[in-house]
Length: 94
Image (cartoon, rainbow, N blue to C red; front, side):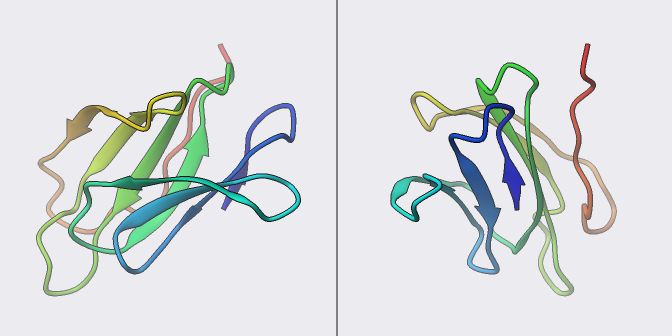
């Protein structure tokens, strides 16, 4: 899980391959779909406009990083080519 920088939104990764966005009071704001394996890590960009997600699990071939636009829920890009699961994603503060 990861909080955005002003604490108004939480992202969670799931074994079902989704990223879900939540308010601090627990209301679901959206579901980001595209991974075909468990989402192991999520991170918000410093401006909170994007979420990165890392995926992969034994026996499945997703093993990708995806960047999502928070406002629309659309996938901006997919970084493929990892030979194994992606367990950590992060944005640089600058």
